[in-house]
Amino acid sequence: MKEMIFLPKPESIVYSGENFSVPDTWSAYLPQKLEGMRSGLKRLWPELVIMPDGQEGEKADAVSFCMEESLPEEGYRLEITKKGSKIGYRTLKGAYYAMATLHQAVLQSDGMLPCCRIVDQPALKLRGVLVDISRGKVPALKTLKRLTDLLASLKYNHLELYIEGFSYGYPSHPHIWREDTCLLPDEIRELTSYCQECFVDLVPQQNSLGHMAAWLTLPEYKGLAEAEEGLTVKGIKFPPTTLNASDPGSLDLIRRLFDDLKDSFQPGLFHVGLDEAFEFGKGKNQALLEKDGGERLLLSYIEALHKLLGDEGYRMMMWDDLFAKYPQMIRRIPEDILIVNWGYDREYPVEQKAQYLKESGRCFCLSPGTSSWSSFTGLTDNMLENVRRTAVAAHRYGAEGMLLTDWGDMNHLQYQPVSYPGLAYAAAWAWNREGMNEEELADALNVFVFADVSGTMGQLALKAGRFYLQEEFRLPCRSLACLPLMFGKTTKQEYEEKVKWLAESVTFFSPPEVCRAYLESYEKRQTFQPKKLYAFVQSCLSQLDSVRPQGTEGETAVREYRNALKMLLYLTQVREEIIEGRENVEDKRLYAEIMREHESLWMERNKRSGLKEGMRMFERIHE
Image 1 (tube, helix red, strand yellow):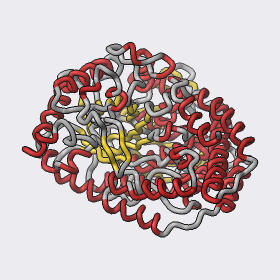
Image 2 (spheres, helix red, strand yellow):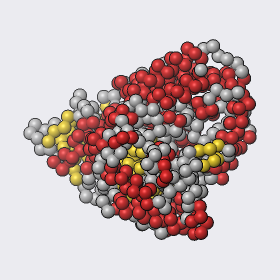
Image 3 (tube, helix red, strand yellow):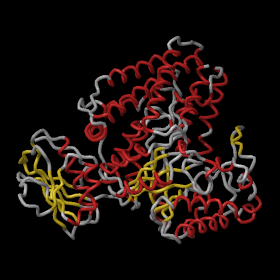
Image 4 (tube, one colour):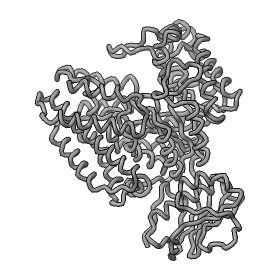
């Protein structure tokens, strides 16, 4: 008997050795108490026939439900017998997750289903994904709905939208946004209801201190910058990004943004950011910080944000960046704040951070990344190790949850399916302490994510994400292929100087363990080998031809991977021209082909916002 695969794995599964003959049509008797999951269940399992409990002419092989008060809130018991399937549940969530597991079993059945007893519950309370909707891409509502369905099928219960700049249609600032460049309040309200139907909480992340560059460009808010002249790092000047926390106008602006978002998002968690406030204390508050260190100002600001939310039933989330500089402050902030620690490198000292948060006595989450941004096809090995180590620390030190981030650096040029391996792997580890291995992940991706009947796409997605290992050295959260888009078409000398600056700039952003790893990689860098890179990409493209996805979503994913791989080919050609002075005559043809397909693929999932900006990045190296 071949054992079934599940994503995520159940906590316990015991096979009886018997088999259940699969009916032509699956049906379930839904008790009145479970009517609340009808809509979400129909999206999860469209072919399922749902009948009222106790209906005459009962179907012997239909799924039946039984409430069991002894089960955990999100736990369930699923028994597949020769006569049918029975589900024990305590809450709607538990019943829904049981049906998600049964549906995964059905997806891999071939007429017969192994009889078994599954007892299951999640290891972490919060199992979340953060999606960047602000730096380049603004997903269409239909895209966010499809993503919600995928996340719910993987037993995620938290979807967070990262908002920077003007990607939300703030009613208080109607002059700064257009409908085709942001998500509108009505769209968010519709998505909130959609998420609730499958037990996913939709949560905003509104920056409230750093990452405010777009707002600080507006004439009415320019004076709110901590450092109006910006910040210079290793000779490179950056625009102002951080609010002046001592200016009442800053809090007034944030209050207006919060009020706008509350109009669309339901009470619950509300993430206020507070990460990467690079200019804090380096401008208007410098004298104040020299006097008392800045802790008093930050504490006052955090308490003010907390009050803006708590008075209306929202629970504040925040990144823990500020505690790195002011470690004692963590014990003085309001106790119900959920603190989130982030780190996206495989060397990130997540266990040390988790232990510190545990000892602080505060509720916390840990946040790894999909490693998809600025990479085109992902950074597989970095993602696997980053997610696994983060999850192990979350379980060991009692984290409330794990929040997987999917960022949009470099105009969010990576396509959505490139993040699927990270989404799937983090789902496995957030639900089950044992997670899964790479072989299991690839198989699960084939069946439950890409729906590839050839059994190829999962393995190929992981392989494509190893392109960066063929390059000369590693950089944080990016492939070297993206460098021409960052630097433009420079001379070899200019290119090497900028690469050196970028490699060394890791010391400004990263902890020592991470710095050492990347600096060592740069010091031991290999020679640029374009033929090796071309061969790797061509191998992936050849394998992609054998993929046989089911449905238009799978077909789109194949197109996206193909264009992403061609982007790597083209950008490697550009690097070859810069580094070796050897022009590739094929790059003009390839460029036109990539750009046509990129525009088509972008518009299939997203609003028009950011499309031209991304294409200009390619145009300036093609001229």
